[in-house]
Amino acid sequence: MKIKYLTTAAKISLAAILSVTAAGAVLAQGSPAPAAKVTATTPAPKLVVVISVDQFSADLFAEYRSHFTGGLARLASGIVFPSGYQSHGATETCPGHSTILTGNHPANTGIIANNYFDLSVARADKRIYCAEDETVPGTSSGSGKYAASVNHLLVPTLGDLMKAANPKAQVVSVAGKDRAAIMMGGRQADELMWLVPTGLTGYRGTTLSPTAQQASAAIAAAIAQPRAASPLPADCTPRDIAIPIGDKGATVGTGRFQRDGGDFRRFMASPEADGAVLAAGAALRTARKLGEGDTADLLILGLSATDYVGHGTGTEGSEMCMQMLALDRELGDFFTRLDATGIDYVVALTADHGGHDLPERNRQNAWPAAERVDKALDPDAMGKAVAEKLGLPQPLLYSDGPFGDMYLSKTLTPAQRKTALAEFVSRFKAHPQVEAVVLGEDLAKYPISKRAPDTWTLMDKLRASYNAQRSGDFIVVLKPRVTPIAESGLGYVATHGSVWDYDRRVPILFWRRGLTGFEQPNAVMTVDILPTLASVIGVPLDASKIDGRCLDLLSGPESSCR
Image 1 (cartoon, rainbow, N blue to C red):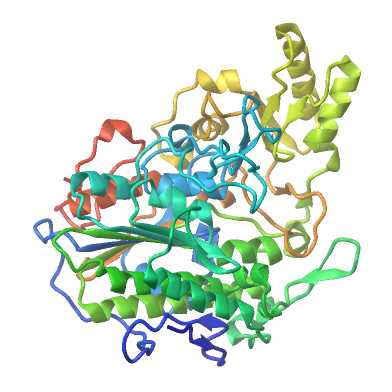
Image 2: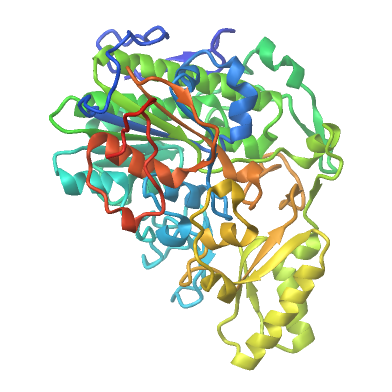
């Protein structure tokens, strides 16, 4: 089994689909053969393919839509909701992925952030990674130091519901990141894995299937190989502008996905990483014969390269342009391979959150007010200053960054807590980069909104991310276009996570052969994807236990919601 790596001008730095057929050839792209029109009486598809493209904002979809000719062009010919929303306030990877196949906001999934704090845990590290088991001895929340786990997800996923309805249903989840594979895959997945420097891995103590082992070895071999700079497509030439960052003479904006052999981070920040996930997914589909049985199966694919590119070089440079064109082609290859099987499949594609460009380029491109966060908002520094002023023990304040959930020490008396909380709220509110400071106790009293997400207030957004057992004592919201990275450096120059629409808005796309395409510009939510797909494949669902609603995918008087 091999990954065929292409470097021609027509295919930029792509990892082609794993050779899972005897001939091992990548099939030519193209539109699928015409099929009978899908109606309310058409039998359910045999395979559901759910794809999350990390940091694929609605802005990126709109910006590059006219350039797509492959897989994304196909999806754009289907059912298009260009104004989809990750409606909650904490627009991070883990919360976003937790909404896609559960039908619930983070307030109910329990996945309120990538990291939160539980000051009652026995270990010294009180920070909790969203997809870890902190009870495993010798672990901590740091990268590579935790025990990956689904324990913190409080609700079932589509795959879990499919398994409950019919144990014969198969569920496979493959992603670039563990939190993507886990939060979408749920508890009952037959195979669940993510990319690591050695190829693919799953939960500790589990053994990959033979096909997954072969895919892992092929991916590891690809990671070990150096890559020369890829050619710059003509469409991306206008974005080929070096942007100075920091004070050490560094620039971004002219990268070509070149890397040394074994450089896993640069591998992840390239189209090759998405190709590897799609390749592994194609191989596992073939090996397990997903979509070929008597019941519907589920294949989940988490594509992370767009996020790594966005963090490392921003959203508006030549690197992101190349990534968008490559993603389109990789998806085209993947869908063409699926077409060749003759399986009736339905696709849903969305994103876990949006993203915003680095402020240095924003200032060059007509937004001079864009800025980086003031170091004075560092929670450790703020906590130390307040502790010293009030004569309170340290550490006093726990947080994962200069915005979001803030936790007060549990050692405080009620009187000390009241005084400290008032001082923190006053200091954060006084800073010119802070939009608002909201108390957790106020959010606990606030109902989750049932209105369209484009009309939500700040409180609505924060409430959808608030869980009384896990959220902070207060939440800090930065003003729009304040990047919460005080010092830029290659590898992490831009980010997401805010309550603002450039981080909340994502495309939601559905496609099935024979399904009449249409576009609905009104706001919908990622929590609507679960009930929509459950209806399409006939999986029973208790609507009272989810926050989303079924989206009708049939154009005309008939409805796919039943």
